[in-house]
Image 1 (cartoon, rainbow over the protein chains, first blue to last red):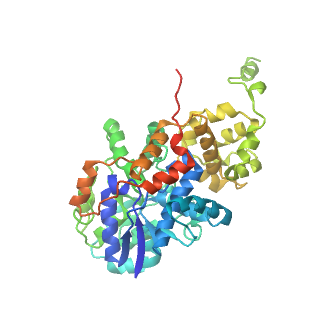
Image 2: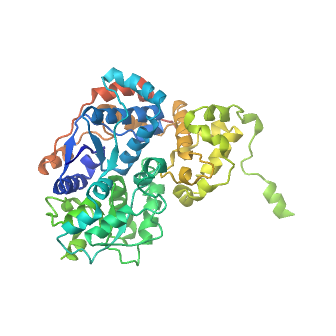
Length: 290
Length: 179
């Protein structure tokens, strides 16, 4: 039995609940047990801006909370994945770990260096496997052409993920999409960042990045984008909506991967995959599934 | 001749008297920025930077060079150092294995201490101390979570507050831009 501590992060459980709902459903379907740890806090990714030390401490606090329970971590957010994986790397150094543990002692925690962090897509890819997913598919998604978007922190820093993925030529999400029967398209701006981490400081710059990718899909007959991070989701969905107020040219539905997988597995789109919560209606996609 | 003259009219000349010769060593002394010593200004970082592509004034290569020239005030007070989208392309592609992503974080940390942090990040840190996440508690999502039968979230995180206060990051004040 696969068992993980579920790391929700900040944005998924408050603003993109459909990702959480669909992820929990998919994990349950495949017998992946998820343990909720109420004491988990923000991964520390954004705090690094003001203090690298604080960001590392916050990540270490979360790692220690999982380690105390003897669990590895399953993440939904790409940025949490990157931040925690980077912290694990840094904490392999004993001097750094000792320094961090000295502070964690104040809150009666210690990180010994035994936790692994895996994004939900990686868990599906490695623990379940595309062959098993293919065998479980119940609905025909072959009419769907979707654009995969990986999320920078699912792939980088390279040192944290190189045994699993190639940042310049990633394949896992393409394969996971193909396993559902949908068709993942190839496109030029595949590696382009969503701009989510620049958004709080400069909305205009972030919008430029969103627009660039969405423009790349024009005339490519793309039915939807398939993502694996709620920050990317908010950028391509809610910010697309905002950009479209002016141009109204995109109207591109955005799905999180567990939702696409759930559709293939015949989950209830509203109750089990949260598709009623989308800012851009996914009805066009549902109409193409038989 | 006019063309040459035009080239020679510098837009923002670097004034040697304003340079801080110790700035580079100060930055490189931080373990996260040590790699900067190996930078040979090839510009691969800027070439692969998505923010540079849409806003050329933001340039990792240029910032690295400014640090090495000792342009302390210009670097730390620059609003541009906060524009990074954290995609890691710069460090991933650097032929010298410089992690400009980490160098930039060191610069941002220094800038924050000197009062140049954007309010967005200062507010987030204040928020994290209160709720454990970067957002305030909202009735709206509490209700939605109930409707979807999702477990409630813990709203109070005294342990996090304690370790954040140990680092002093909660005392950082946001930048005040003068008119």
